[in-house]
Length: 424
Figure 1 (cartoon, one colour):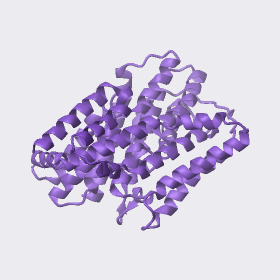
Figure 2 (cartoon, one colour):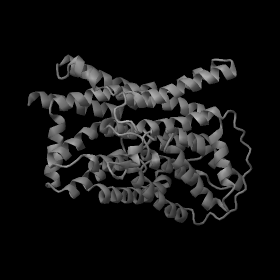
Figure 3 (tube, one colour):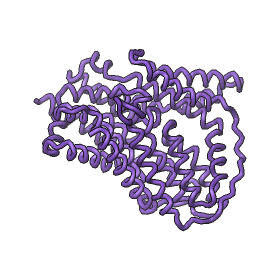
Figure 4 (cartoon, one colour):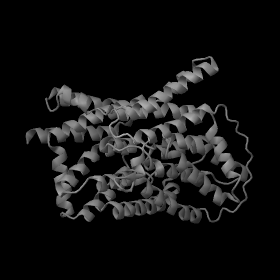
């Protein structure tokens, strides 16, 4: 019992430090794991075995390929072509938001904002209108659909790694519709919300296709990553690192190709710099810490607490998990939260005698979308606001929540309801 309270106390201190010192998170998590090792809460073999190398390899490879994709300028050209089809800025906002959502299903949310926001700024400048609502809509839309596919967001990769889910499992899992249907259901119902929010913006849009694609190979690599992950999903007894090898392998092909094409190592260096090594180290540390609190009995204790609060009701416990996930992820980073809570919700399900998928999918819906409530709830929001501030525009909390709250509520309620209907 003393070990459990000690492990819990260390974990709480770690989480407080993660919130207080965001720039040092990549150091705090592995140092906490080291403390667990020194105190004997975790043995070296257990710590090493806790790290999900497949997840880390998938992240690293996808980050590199996305950087090449952005530099090819294909996303900008795609956005301009889309905008040629819309009659006014109201529908431009919808198209850009939906476009950023679709892109973010396969590309990191922050990268998606960096791709699409410049197009939104160009449209706003041309029409002499305020770009703030448009960029906010792009940012919150990019957060929405990251949970739709295995490669769309770090939290999705965490879910897939923990639940041993393949790319196809996000669409069809154990004979039922996967989490992608819940995410897309929520996304569809945000379109009327966007149309209402931009109901006064009736100015016509006229956009020329000016962006020249520098290279089509990165686009082929992006598509190849998705296709190979789908193919790999068909094999039940594949090696554990298969998905990670696919993502890293295609990234290496892309890097070598660019080195040969440009006859320079400059772009290769920039691509490797784009890999967020600090996030990879943070996740490795979190994997070890979570293994430590699990072995100390903390996970089981938290699961039992949830069950007591939920009164043994599966519905009430489900609503509790989704609701708490939305509220917490509005203020804290959802990566450590999801990494921590996946074992918790699995423990809750085990103690209630049900499979974990209902609670795990509800967790992902709440944690992924809750970040849209506040300007600091998701990295994509911060990136979008940073772009606006760089252009000289001020973004108040009121500006953000005017779009973020209705957007979040309709998407979360719809997605959570679909998951309950399918998986309860």
